[in-house]
Length: 85
Image (cartoon, rainbow, N blue to C red):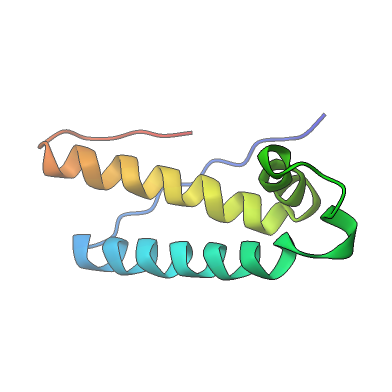
């Protein structure tokens, strides 16, 4: 059983937006790097992303962080506070 780790971080909006852009860029680069690896050739396209994320937990963390940052920025734009897990 995995143990969840929760973090809370307060960032200026400009820093959060820059971090989000950087995480997206890094995730795109890493997915492109692994997409055509021999080990994933037999994996159907619609399952390949999930397989890569399962095999590379750091990339899965990038994806979760991207989701949390997007939600926080959206709620900030709407004038609400945001709590994500």
